[in-house]
Image 1: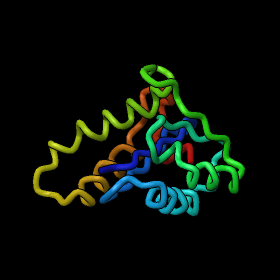
Image 2: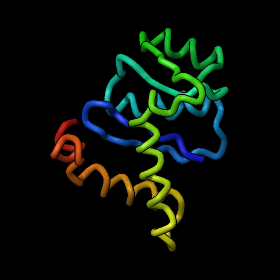
Image 3: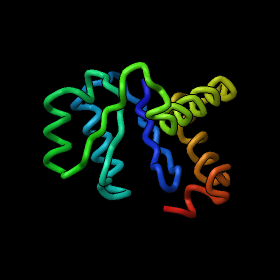
Image 4: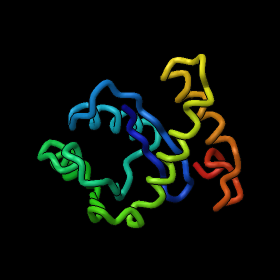
Length: 127
């Protein structure tokens, strides 16, 4: 299982390989990302149990992060994240001999150092 995080401005992506998707594990990985990149003003997520849990809501509130949950069955409301997940998942079968962690790292290196079609520059340059 993977937690895919994408920054709306820079298109920077992080992928967290997780053995299970729980609020506690998600918060653990978000803290790691926030340690490197700072706290966001807003997070957009789907309505999965992880993101609707009281523990996750408390984490958002404690860190003054505005949490927007997308409308169910309305994928255009979270198009950036959906495209990021699709891009990541489509790259995995092409890397046949790597472990899951190696695949994620190889993908992220290439993704974050390649100019993005929307911005014209690499996500790394905009961070």
